[in-house]
Length: 142
Length: 255
Image (cartoon, rainbow over all chains, first blue to last red; front, top):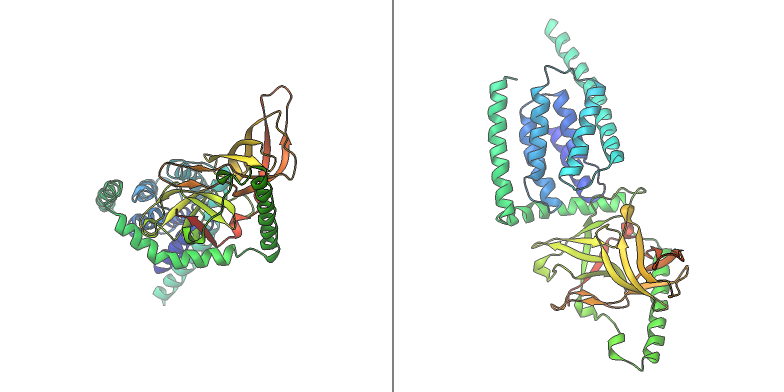
């Protein structure tokens, strides 16, 4: 959890100072597929507030979008299996909508890059999660 | 996770967000915004320095030479106009405020140019909407919005940016930003003579409140001219002499 928070905050700093890719959204979407925990909703709110404050936007706009996006993912978590394709498509659509609705511009390239970043995160953390679950099971059997 | 819990948490958080949104719209949350900005400013600055860095010596020398060229041109104009007070410009250093660039959202290094810059100076430092932002007599942009501690600069490459300008041969036109951070000089009469490598400077646009852009600030040099005999006007593509993405400090003309 702490690692996710730190990673998201780092993405927020990058997003507000160096690059325009919505990395924070991509991280939140990807982790909501992997971990499916309620605290991700609270994290979405906080990250959205920080992001809006740093970009001098109306505070709450990004949080609203993040919350709805994560909530929709949670709603459909049982109906859709979290695969690479699903994570990529969700990231792509959400990043596209976010840049269009909140930032006022849209870029297919940015959506593609952010989605690719999400996929990389998904592969890495899904593997780590699988290894951790296996270790846990082994320990339980012993 | 249980659906009921999820719905409840979502409703509570959405309500909280809506409250924040409304308060922010009513400008009640300015202090909270400033607080968050103050905490993250050092990290933003560090990230910018790590990923973008500072301008090279060669660029600095280039800027110095361009400044001298404009100064010389200005001197010639002064003689021509018999030292007409209105055609002279100069920025008193007492009217300048140094500001650090702490952010450049919508900027992808190597892909696009920065369209907006976030500076660490705001209303408390005398920064107001419409003030010019410069770097060694080069116009960087205009203050678009400012709060207590921070301000956003609309750079020349922003698609909504427009400003009156003239070339070193006194051909006047309008500077406009284009997608991807390009700068175009438009509305130049066909009869006017503009050519590649001509320097383009501001015409001067100070409003009744005393804010705006002073004349003879360098915008850039012409890299290509688009002249069509059937058109009323000719256009030119302009390249700034300064790579904004490499700057870390700029100056705001506060008076």
